[in-house]
Amino acid sequence: MNKPILQLRNIAYSYHSLSGEIPALSDISFDVKEGEFLAVVGPSGCGKTTLLSIIARLLMPEKGTIVFNNPSGALEYPKTGYMLQHDHLLEWRTVFRNVTLGLEITHQETPEKIAYAEKLLADYGLYRFKDKHPCELSGGMRQRAALIRTLVMEPDILLLDEPFSALDYQTRLSVSGDIGRIIRDTKKTAVLITHDLSEAISLSDRIIILSKRPAFVKKEVAIALSRADDTPLSSRSAPEFQEYFNLLWKELSHDVSNEK
Image (cartoon, rainbow, N blue to C red):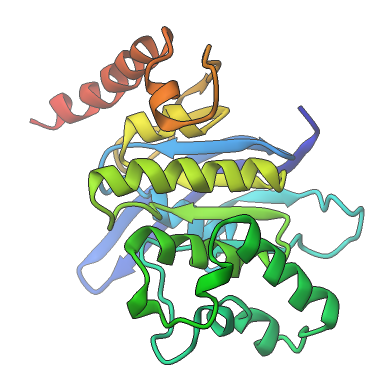
């Protein structure tokens, strides 16, 4: 595995209101290596999305430091792509115009970028739908379009905030497998927030387990599955899968039982 692209050290954050302070994160420290697929799990409300927002620079930590090592060696902050729970495709734009929206906004609609967008659509089964509108796509196709919209900007790190949670179970299995494959094919670094332990195990190289709020890192678990391919079914059928699931469940159940 390559050197860290992201290093978090002693990150803390609290929300403030007229009724008082609500601590969300406490002393969060971990690395994300270049090319790694990292999953973050934890009890509901523990601050997972807050953590992702801090990595994306949408929020500033109250304490601690974040160090980004740009893969290109440049001094600027690496390009970050953020994929949300919902696809947020614009219904009045075609699939192609949705995919190229970021290029349009940033004035990067070069022939090379347009060709790359078309290649991604072709590679991942959406090219023949490029002139359709989002309402004509299935939920899974919409999520693939949303990911392509993010990838076409060529980010160095992808932040995924429960991107499959709005899908039904069968579609979720299929689309999570597709998107995991796309991310690995493009050799992107990814950080996934999820409540689904099976999803975390089947997609990631490593899992960060957060405690209840204010969250800290309880455990890091490296994932190594013996599987024939990268499909969700193959991952869930791996002999190590249940052991990983039990470990994660035990850590998270301990926090939940202590709250009762």
